[in-house]
Image (tube, rainbow, N blue to C red; front, side, top):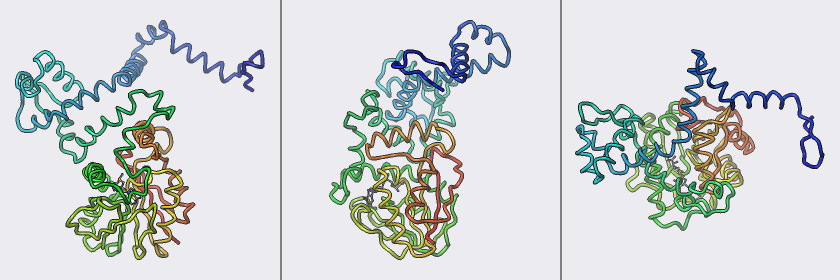
Length: 369
Ligand SMILES: C[S@@+](CC[C@H](N)C(=O)[O-])C[C@H]1O[C@@H](n2cnc3c(N)ncnc32)[C@H](O)[C@@H]1O
């Protein structure tokens, strides 16, 4: 047993702690590292671990380099033709010495490649500027980084966050938001929706002729992608005033799932990137409303990034968990936690689909009996 309290006057170290401390002491020991460095396979392992630690330490610097290349439009410029450092210097308005540092940094993080004195896009650079939503997300992150500037206060929870203001519906029913407030987040979501829609629709089979309601579907990007695969599906979006797109090909229903019941008569209800914005109480009520709105045999689809299913993951447990925490009402949940909430709302046959890209989304399906 562990008896390690200051009051007890003595402490008895359990066996497991002995081995744990012995291992820690070994890995802290410089002499051990010098020996390991001379053993072929082990030296490779140690080198990779060292690089991982360095990447952790320097991550923010790389992110800021990426930000400059994107925010100034320089990466997008290289799409058309290669640029020399001198051309980039005049484009950026930075002196040549600083430009060269930024160019080499851009090459080191894999955005650009120097060839005969000119910089061109790498494959990764082209993917970044080509994938819808990625550039917008990179720019959007400056808000999150401002909130994380003082990480201790952030985790104490003592500070107001800028991110909660970017998502103005988190503290209200949402029916009284200004068009401007809605516009800025709707555009960001709509742009980044294509990859989520692709992975979601790859995971599920939708009946070819059914009535489909996407709750919180914003401008309708998801139902637009759905209609390309299932043209006969009768699709509708339920969302706050101001978030629907004009001239939508789908039915637009204005309402707040915090204040109103969901409309009845749909065979499938989807919640795409909705639950992780809200506290448990809000989504318990939303899932109960979805259950009441569906008829017998009706289906529920939940799709959003989740915590690592077996162990903590970088995308789920570092990025999304901390992003949603900064929203102040948000919470990234594990697939099992989401399933438990779905089950508690009365759904059956709950299926967690294996995610191909958990950093984009994980999909869970369920049925009303
Ligand atoms: C994170 S965005 C996701 C949008 C879209 N489903 C997607 O994945 O791109 C959350 C959406 O939920 C909507 N929303 C937030 N609170 C709502 C409420 N109380 N009732 C209806 N919709 C709401 C927002 O307007 C927004 O469109």
